[in-house]
Every structure is written in structure tokens, then in C-alpha cells.
Length: 132
Image (cartoon, rainbow, N blue to C red; front, top):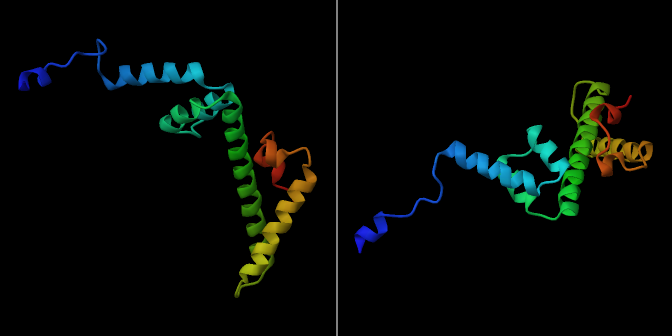
């Protein structure tokens, strides 16, 4: 009985990691949308995230990429607002409520300046969001 467990059938001729990774990438690319593939190639997704998201419907894949872009854009706006807020004040204590208000104003202004959904649709770049 023990000998039956030691002789397992080899599924592929090569079981190396590189060969497995190549097969996996080929399988993922056949299911992934263009946007998802671009995000992976740009290094924004790990191989595992790329694999898991490629199993979703195309509409869901695009929605996930859009939401991620909006999250990143919002974070950039917030970071810029904090930077501007800290540059404008003198040394001393900072009230978090003032920082929060500055971030909310910056996000509202960004939504107002880009009503077509730049922050929501992910069709803009960070250079479009950073404003004076």
C-alpha cells in the first residue's frame, strides 16, 4: 500500500516552477481583460491577484480596476491636501479636524473639477488631479 502512494503520475513533462508559471500566465491571459493585463504588467497586481481577478466576469474585472484607480486618485488628492495644509501652518499643534476638513474640501473640489468621473472612472492621471 505504501508503494502505491510513492508512484504518482506526473501531470506535465516538466514540473519546474518556471514551466508552471508560464502555463499559469497563459491561462490567466486567456481570461483577463486588457485593463487587468495592463495593471499586472505595470506591477500594480501580484500574480495571485491577477489570477483571482481574471476568474471574474469581464465587467467585474473592469469595475475592480476602476475602483482601484479611483482609490489611488483620492489618496493622491488627500496627500496633496495634507501637504498644502502643513505648508500653510506655522510650527505648533495641528488639529486633526482641520486636516480632515482640508482633505474633504480637496476631494470635493476634485469631484467638482472632474464631474465626468475622473476620480470615479479612473480615466485620469495623478498630474490631472494635483492642482494648485
